[in-house]
Length: 434
Image (cartoon, rainbow, N blue to C red; front, side):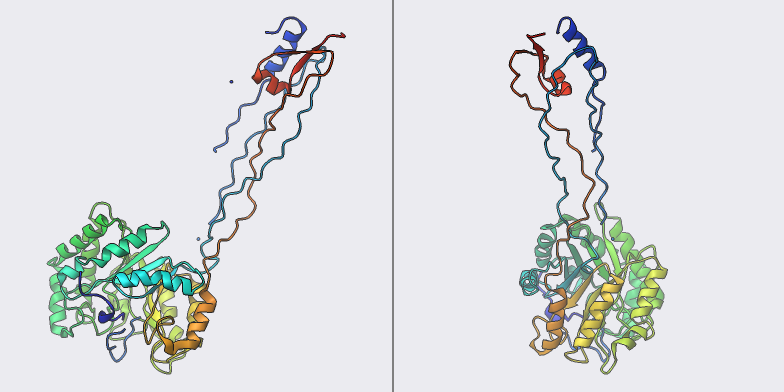
C-alpha cells in the first residue's frame, strides 16, 4: 500500500645424581593437550499494509612431574598467577529485545538518509531492516534500472546483520487501473514465460550490487483490487507466473534470495489462500496489516477471516516464518491501542522482520497528527537493540608461568634448560654443604 508517489520514478646433561633426577623428571613429562580450540489514494478497502554460545574447550592442565625420592631437590614455589577470566564479547541476543524491525521512509536515496535520523529519534535503536519499492511504471523499473538501488545496496553492506527488503511489481503500469480482462491476459502471458527475462535481469543486477540475499516481496497485496499484478482475475495463472519468476531468479549464479508472499490482511477482493503458489517457491509468508477498516477493534483484526491469526496459523502449517512488510495506522486515526496491540502481537509471534510505513496517515515520525501513537511506539522501541551480556562461560585454565627466583646461599644453580626447569617448577640447585 506504500504509495507510488512516495517512491521515485527516476532510476623450546647433567652427571650423577642430578642426571638421575632430571631423567626421572623427564620420564613423567607433560601431558599433551590442545584446545580448539504519502500515500496513493487508497482503494475503498486498501491494505497497504533464535543465540547460544558453544562451551569453550577445556584445556587440560599439565601435571607437574613426581621427583625421585632418593634425590634431594630444592623445592621452589613459583608465585601463583591468577587465571584470567576469558569472556567472549557481549553480543545482541536475537528475540530477547523483539524482532528485527525497520521503517519505510521513502524509496529513493532520501529514504536511506532518513534511516539514521529515525534511529536517533529512537534513542539509537538500530534499524536492521531497510525497505524500498521498485516503481512499476515500465519494465525497466522492474529490471532494477534505477539509481537508488545502489544507495540501498551500500546501506545493506555496511553491516552483516542487516536485511534488505525489496517490493517487486509483477507487471508494468502497475498502478494505472488496468481492467480485469487485461490483467487476466497479462497473467496468462506471464505464466507462459513471456516476461521471464525481466526478472532475470533484476536478479543479475542485485547480484552485481552485492545484495544477493535480498528479500523479495513479489506482487504484494495480490488479493486486492489496486495493482495490475493482482491475483483475482486468474488465480491459477497468477500462481504459475509467480513460480516462473522464482525459478528464473533462483537460476542466476550467486543469488541467495528469499521470496515473501504478502497479501493484505483480510479477505479483500479474493481470499489470499487461493493465490498461494506453493511451499517450494515461498520462503516467507507476510501480511500487510493497517489499522482499518474504520471502527474495527484489534481483536477483530486478529479473528476475522484471513486475518492476523489465520495468517500465523497458515504460516505455521506450511513451516514458514511470518513477516509484516507494511503496517501502521489508518482508518481509525491516532490509535495508541492499535499501536500497543500490534507491537505486542509482533513480540509474541516474532516475525522474521517488520517495517512500519512512516508517512501520513500511517506513520509516527513524519506524521504530526499521530502524537499518542508516536509516543507509545517510541517508548516501546527506543534503544531497543541493547547489547545483552552472555551467561558466564566455561573458563579456559591457563598454566601458571614459572619464575626463576634467585638461588639460595650455599647453592650452585645448574642450567638444565628452560624446558626442564619449567616442569621442575624453577631452578635446580646443587647445595655446596652436602
